[in-house]
Length: 197
Image (cartoon, rainbow, N blue to C red; front, side, top):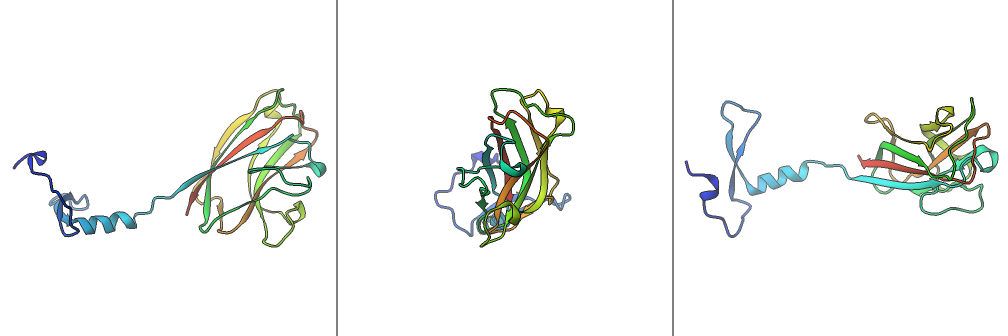
């Protein structure tokens, strides 16, 4: 049998041209052939999820009125009672992981029993983007006394199917402060990794 690279190359590929393939489901007689069109059809039906990174900042953490902090996706909103939103597209998204890092001049000061607990949620279409209309979907992470005195950073990977967000959903990331976390003049950078479902 000739070495495969010793065969002459083809100048034009036709859908009816044949390829040699190994059928792993039949180990006793695995060598088979397939047309270029059949291979193309098989590849096009395999779904590879698109992945998206969405970045944002919680500006001046733990400084918002009524103890809520809002992640700003692309810019801030006014007035400060409004929650910044990001709208999903034409397909559902699954949150795979979340990463965060504290970007303040000074380390965090979080006493025992104090925290900022972040969750992801939505605001219904046609509703004012205020905390009273926020519907939590799932908890994300918390900055706690364990982060006291640090420039906190972290990452959480969620089990498959834990957080799925439907298409055309107005999403928000909201932090709820307990106690008096300081300093209030730094930012918490957050990155969410989604995949299409």
